[in-house]
Image (tube, rainbow, N blue to C red; front, side, top):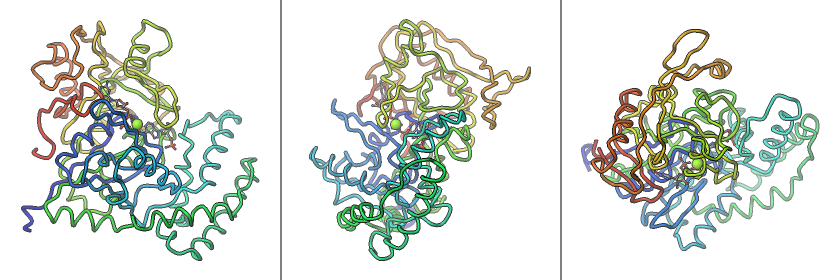
Length: 443
Ligand code: GDP
Ligand code: IMO
Ligand code: MG
């Protein structure tokens, strides 16, 4: 196989605060892919796929699993809760999906263990009671697991292969976390034996799926297969570039697709930014274009109810607001977006007018990109452009020319404001509800 015939790779990332519809789009693209790789985050993600009306919710397993024959990789940048992973596999198997023969888990993934979950939740409770205010985490232990990774003391997937090594490291780690849990967080300590026994039981089941993911991706490409890199969360939740400290604990940006899966950055050929036609956010933190969602008859209520904006992982109502082109500008910059897929356009159907934030007023100045300091973001007053809405339904449309004129005009202005081409539009939750303008694998 010559270099010319190598497969191509597309990275799918969220450009907002998560839940943009990444899972739907990844699933749609799998007809051109041999494999899908997750490269960061963990089961804090909730990706919903709808195929011929049937819903599947995924958290840790890549959104390639619903397409027969597509391999699914969990890269080194992902934090893995082994118990959760096994239950997700079992749930899919119960629905008739073959998982074990095509799921490959990097040996280098840090593990999420029960004390991480305890620390995550106890810390949130303390932040709330002390008046510091919650981050609003998913409570899955994501932050504490990444902290152990960076502190170079994490238990990793590969430790599951070596019971003695696992036991020794677990003793040390548990001692530390129990000290923090009891002494600082006023929680209950956890016992060694049940954690160890359960991990060893799960290890037996996971062992056949352990792999060197970087090498496998390279091999797939060498054989001419395309790979999709599936981002979780979104750019504004990125640990470095997001609205810190109201962020998740990993890099969600496209650059991390390479480091988080074990391939070189020259192997990322096209970056697809997923952007909801409006904005949502779950958890605390600044959100300049936020609208109240509770009162029937208001735009916020429309977005929340028509968009069914409720999280699949925690069941929390998502906060809703207008599209923020100034925030998106920063996302486009950081991710090097090649093209955009605008999702949930159909949710705007029936609104009389539609607004888009094109910049902010901050301390008497006009700025056109989201500031980096969360306190400054709070002080930003959005500057809006207003567009006429459309009354025709866009739900399920598959042709650009069939969109109402006002919808096309809105999208054309979005594209102009944020400086990235719209290559796809999603008009419904189902795989088929998709308009293609330029195919990411053919761009
Ligand atoms: P992800 O985390 O980025 O994968 O997004 P989620 O799956 O958490 O949230 C997106 C939700 O919107 C899911 O329930 C999808 O089924 C749904 N969805 C995706 N695209 C569209 C669309 O174009 N229109 C509508 N109405 N729903 C969509
Ligand atoms: P997907 O992949 C939306 C948010 C949480 C919280 C913050 C930190 O479905 O887009 P964490 O548990 O990660 O420490 O929580 O990040 N968050 C998400 N919001 N979609 C997600 O994933 C999210 N994953 C985490 O609500 O504000
Ligand atoms: Mg989600």
